[in-house]
Image (cartoon, rainbow, N blue to C red):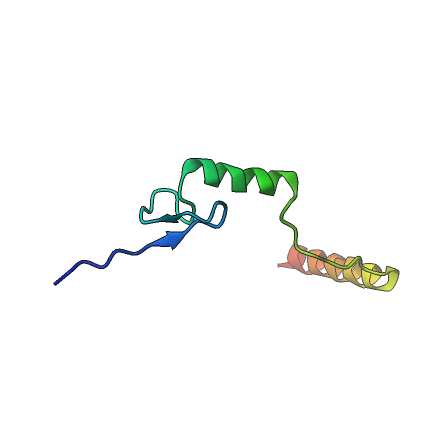
Length: 72
């Protein structure tokens, strides 16, 4: 029976590779480039700022949770 060779595409440079050492990247360089992008804030999840009412409700909920945790 023949062995199946899995190839992957590096998300940084697009190179096809078969190794798993730096997966999902083809090399340490591409892994470091990705890490640098995280550190520089290139990757971000969009969010909305809470309005004043939502902020107050959140603070109250956290306060209640802390009180309940101290009782236990």
